[in-house]
Image (cartoon, rainbow, N blue to C red; front, side, top):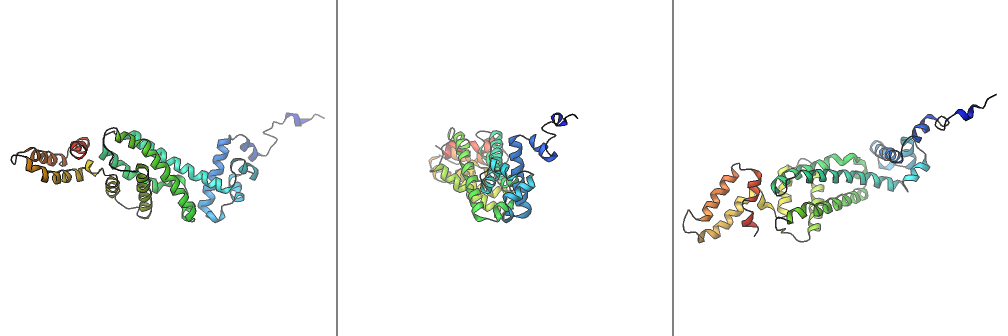
Length: 265
């Protein structure tokens, strides 16, 4: 009688479900566990989030779960970190797509971006943040910290290469601004993009680069400086005419740059 055992492969020697698991890479198995954390949290709530529930949903053993994560808190942190990675990825795309020097254009696109980031959550179940103040507080801090640091390392560096930065404590200012925006948008999802844009511009003292405020700011300075001109056709009157033309439909690069020398010596 022949021994058929030798003809059975390692894959055939284990149950079908385990056989499929053997073919998964470590990253793929870890991904399945994190997907299970999201699913259990979304369907059952944080109170039912346990290693047993997650491993049952993922179809893996408890020992495999602990191979990747020290405990459930570590798995939840990994889920949140992936959501933050998604936020940063979108910021990177925004930063790569903006035109250096087009400040108003950057403001016009970053305002809806912030709203979209809050709305999407990047696959982060709302139950993970709504059921626990501590969880949401920690998540929000990590989001704001990384976003603020990214902007300081990229966008701010580009700005100061061409303009004067008129804020102190740069990182702290961006941290406070982003924290406030995310919390406000979360509770006021219908806030207009224009409102978000103006909050950002006024906090960073760059409203002079926007069409809405640049002309009025020039007008206030002209009230003082027109006394130096020799008549109604003096240089400041000509500048006012230019400002009026700009606001009537000039391209964005002209709108945000033509008076920069007056506001930013």
